[in-house]
Image 1 (cartoon, rainbow, N blue to C red):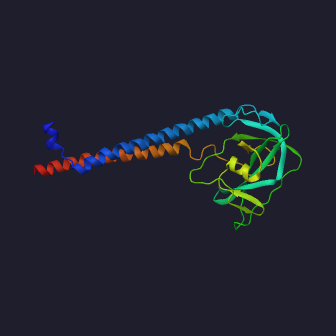
Image 2 (tube, one colour):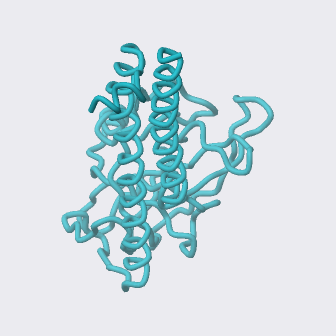
Length: 243
């Protein structure tokens, strides 16, 4: 211990910084590893579910066999007067909207919000896209998803453009109250092979596991660098004091 005291004399402020900072940096690295593992599991689950046969719900909304990515098939009628836009959707650097249309199921009359995919916006915000909506009964295939809770983003209808309501986040409860419709608390995202949709290249996860692992390496690297600088500075100070 006497040898260490002579060879390693860090400043008190540096010791405090390491004691406080090192656990934080390591915790951030561990959290990124955990997030990467979660994303990898989600991708594997999506791939496995994608290989499963389509679940035919017909015209019923009382069954919910889906846990994540398994495809379902439903029949119903699009309510062309109950359509809106999900704002701030970007594809290849182009700003646009996801088209949201309410589907009344043919069997029990349940109401499901269908995300039909992405359309580009015009040069001005007021230049909303136009799209066809088929009359009569349709059969569509897609993925039932729970609405995503985006922090600090309000799900209420903030404005209307071109006769369509606009939301920044899908909140089926608030939207149902706005439309005076008892919407099912699920969103049906049309699968790419289904008709009646537009561009549908939604990623399963917003950020892949490799990105998280890369961030983890950065946090652990910063922790290692902090510890190395602490040791080097302590050794140099000990030598300076001996001289």
